[in-house]
Structure formats: C-alpha cells, structure tokens
Image (tube, rainbow, N blue to C red):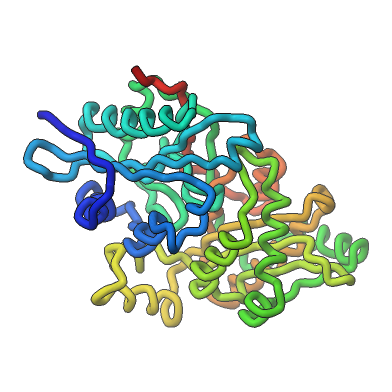
Length: 380
C-alpha cells in the first residue's frame, strides 16, 4: 500500500493528528489518553510558551484512501542543544499502525525537517522539556499506563530498532504498596534529620503557590535538582506558569509536602496526586460533552487506590543527608489518612542509583522500562 506524509497546517490535519490515538488504541485496556485539548494547546504558539524559543512541526501519515495511519512531532530545543553541546532534533507524540513503511516515512519527515535547520542527530521520544512525557515503553505492555507517561504497543520499539536506532537512555518506574505504618528505618532517619537540620513540612495552599511565590520557588528547586539529568534544560518563568496552571487544579495539596528549614528555605519537595488513569480512560481524552464528569468524580468524590508520585526533589546542597525521610514520613501518613493503597513513581533514569536506592526501603518493584532512542540523521 502507498502512503504519504503531510505537514500539519490546516484544522483538518490538526484534527487527524489529535484523534489518531483513538484508532491505534481502540480496545486497548492499558492505554491512558491525553486530553485532546492539551495536545492542541501544546502545538499552539499562543498557548505554549516553549514555542517562543523552540521550533516544532507536526506531521501526519495517510494511506491511499486518505485514512490517517501515523503521526509524529519534530522538536528542536536550542537551549538543551546548547547546554549539552548537541545538534539534536527530537521526535515525540509518535503513533503508527504496524507497517514499517509508515514508521519509516514519519521518521524521515522529521529528519529532513531537522537537517534543513542544521541538526545532525535525531532522538526520542522526547518532549519540549524534561517535564513532558518521554521514553518509549519497551517492557510491561500489559500494565495500565498513566497521565504522565507514554504508553505504546510492543511493535513500536521493534520498528525503531530495525531502522538502526540505538538506546540513549532508559527510565524505570517504582511501584510499592503503601505501608500501614512508617517503616522503622525511615522513622529513625527522620529523628536524626530533624535534630540536625531543624526541618518542618509546610502544607502549602493555592494562595501560597499563586500569590506568595511558592510556585516559582518550588520550580526553582526542581530546575536546580534536575539540571544534571539526561537532556535537561531549565524551565523558563513562562513555562513554570503554564505548568502551575495545568497541574495545580488537579492536585490535592495535602499530597504536596514542601520541606523547609528554620529560615524558610525550601530544601525538598514532592509533587504527588491521586491517579486519574481510569477517569481519563472513561473520558476518551475529551472533556466534552461528559468527560469532565469522570475527572471531577475522581478529583472530588471517589478516587482510585493509586497515587502517582510525579516529582521528588532535594536541594543539591542537601543531597545525601537523609532529607527524603521527612518526605516519606509525611506522605505515608497522609496516603493512609486519604485511603490510598499503592503508589507509582514517575519514570527515573536507570543510572540514577541514589534515587533508585531510596525506594528499596519501601520494598518497591521496578518495572515499565522506557527508552530514548537515537541515531545520526539519515538524509539523502
């Protein structure tokens, strides 16, 4: 069958781009859809501040009958390229039917687009920033996904590897049952840490975040804590405001411990929220006409048993000092009070031994490996 690629320029092409996953994942019990409105906003220069400094181009693949069979997004992040001394074009939001010609055409479209702008290597799946979804699932395809991670069929990585893509980085997630009591090892560490550093947990309010500067202070800590990680580039003030608008309305702030010292300095933070996986599945990724009811129900009335631990960050000056004991003590108590049964972390680099080790004290199981692939551009 013959296929062709089009750059997304019209409203129809944008609709085709946004709606393709509903075709690819029809009947799949593990896929958790993005909100279609979020995808549209992320590609809109007036709504996504990343596009003031970054470049993007969306592509859609069609068959001979004009049916959508694939999509891909090309991204160039000049800041990340400057920090890491690279000339990478990223690909993201990739979806395709199980046909090697479709996946080849999609990758080739991004490669040609990147080459025209001086890029020499392609990598992905990656997003605009390190806080976007990244990494193609390569294991555990029978596990339900989440609102903050990529899910894909098993044939996706097979296609990339046949095209000569190689591993650049892997992320894994940790899953653990929430203990009924704070483990003794954490309690002992907590006692020592509090005596040494005079720390306390501040339960921030929305007023603190939006009016008292805590939103910016939290993201300043995140930028500093994550700066050494693979492909990371600090978020701009405008991007920070975008993330605050997107996520704070979804979060129960009782599940966001901010650890301060006696001087009011933020030394650690955890951003966690009740899972919205099932609500998003029921909504089909659409707020209208009735999708909002499923999300509201999960947020305000009956939540799932699962907690998603989106971010845990410690000020680099306090690394190795046991500060995580303060966070874990607080969260375990809070999760039990709110009735949650188990928790799952966001993807963590497999090479980040210090971070991975902290979850072992909670008897965590590591799974859901995701991979960033890369290769030199193959443009003729």
